[in-house]
Image: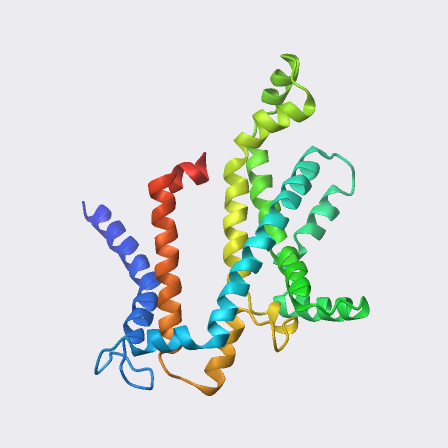
Amino acid sequence: MIRRLAWRCAILSIYIFLLAPLVCVVIVSFNAEAVQTFPPKSWSFRWYAHALTVDSFRSGTWLSLLLAVSAALVATPIGVAAAFGLHRSNWRGKAALESLFLAPLIVPGIVIGISLLIALAAMDVRDAPVRLLMAHVIAILPYSIRTVLASLSRLDPLLEEAAETLGASGFSAFWYVILPLIRPGIVAGLVFGLILSFDDVSVSLFLVDARTTTLPIAIMSYLEYSFDPSVAAISSMLIAATLGIAVLLERGFGLKRLLAG
């Protein structure tokens, strides 16, 4: 009984540790004063209205959303193909190739951003959205590869052989047997890609320009000159949007079923 109570208290402490910063941000967003203070001395919605009027926040939100969706949709099929090839391959360079694909997980984002800036400048790629899309695909690709490889490692190879024995072609066996079974890895990689791309700062910092700025960089630039609760307000709106999407997925599909198959 005591051990069970201690375990529940430990779990509750972890939840409080993780959620307390989010609660503080939401509370600060209702501060009526011009400087962020906790707890607020007076309450107001003025900073929510102000955050919606900041052009950099509005344009940055749409760009970050479009960039995250585009990068995830591009990286996911590439990651599935790469993971499937690595899983089936038996040649000696397999380990080196896998390490190369997963290198962005190890290399700091600042190094990736600077390297891509130099490489794309040498290739005369000056369009900021194109540079950002290429960078974000490279940055999130390892997550798609790793999650799909994890799903493939638990796959019974006899299932594909049974499908081919019953007359299915290689493509049909992959499409109707393998692909549904590795769906949890694909969805997990897609979700990770969306989140990481939307929140990225270190890679995007070197590839944006004056007319093309993502939301995290717009927030960082805003904080250099202002410390009002507008940032807390825009963060609270993002938290609410994330919770809303999670609720819709749970009601429509079931998150457990969607991620676990």
